Image 1 (tube, one colour):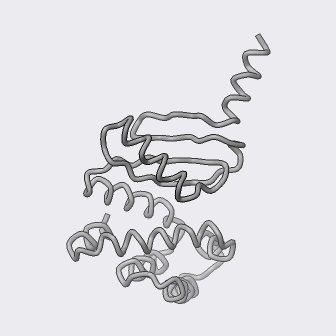
Image 2 (cartoon, helix red, strand yellow; image 1 turned 30 degrees about the vertical axis):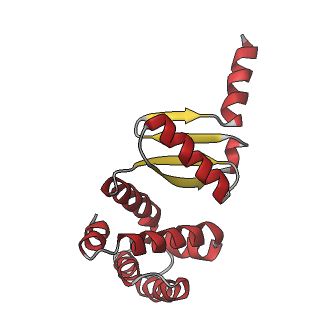
Length: 168
């Protein structure tokens, strides 16, 4: 991914990571921003202007702002979420970490994230970065995916398993 390579070469990995984290949070919290990035009705020019203003408002670093401008100019703003995820995985690999995709029913606080990282580190024997996603449909618990391994401790899955067992 070009953004990662540029950030690595310019020693801006942490700045870009922070900006992408801010952007991910803004996308989760703002319906308007989500619509801007996904609506086919927004012209490329309008999207580029709006995304530039958003980058300035969120105080994103210049690499991330330019990257978003390129996505807008090419009609690819809908690819922000996969790009953020890919960047996080590349940055984690660069730091020698594993990346865990964690889905929870509610946002996790800093203490819960720290405890989760500690637990995963003890289980996997390596530092772990987490890519957090909130999905109320799982009802409760966590779904943790590291590489090809997935641990599904969601209440939805437990209820589905119980319902299947009761059907006999």
